[in-house]
Image 1 (cartoon, rainbow, N blue to C red):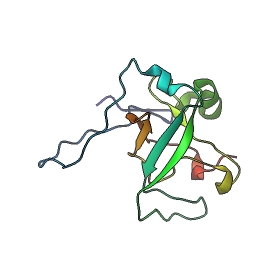
Image 2 (cartoon, rainbow, N blue to C red):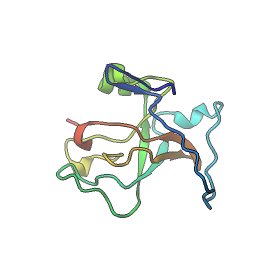
Image 3 (spheres, rainbow, N blue to C red):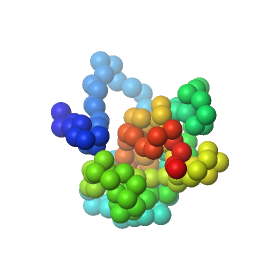
Length: 135
């Protein structure tokens, strides 16, 4: 209900669904607001999804995949994304490069997937660089 699409900033880009039947799964613990140290730049995180695995086509993965990637500082993120990045509401993770081989991160189709740090849910994939490769 707090979603705002302001000048391209997808703040509060999340939805919560209530299912009619319960899901038989063990949930991940959610990071507490006191776990801020887990968001330190360089901390290794893991992202999961069925998104694109290359920038050269739009095919999504048929199997769940994961990638280990570093948390990026708010300052670096703000430098890359400007006002689209909302510090305190968003976290940046990944390594962008000029090619697929140099890039580690989420891509189109991974949105909604978890960002896990230290065995805890730390975020939800929302958006990233165009075509998943930096320039």
